[in-house]
Length: 78
Image (cartoon, one colour):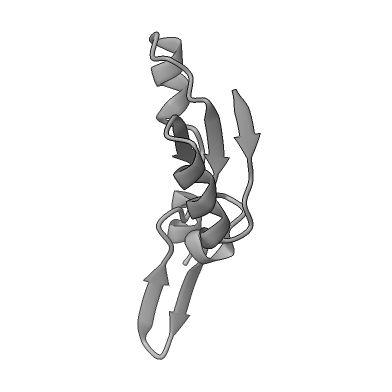
């Protein structure tokens, strides 16, 4: 199993397009139990935690923007 930590959404898209056995994760809360239960390991793990656009939580002009991989802890702080 290989590991990649792209810095942009575009890099993540390219990695996923090049490897049909790849799987994304942002905390491995689902992945680790699935692998322990016998699910085959992905050929490539694409870690989304390094992509600021996906992990950010912002509040501007009365509007919240929450990235798709924003940690729950960040949501409770804001």
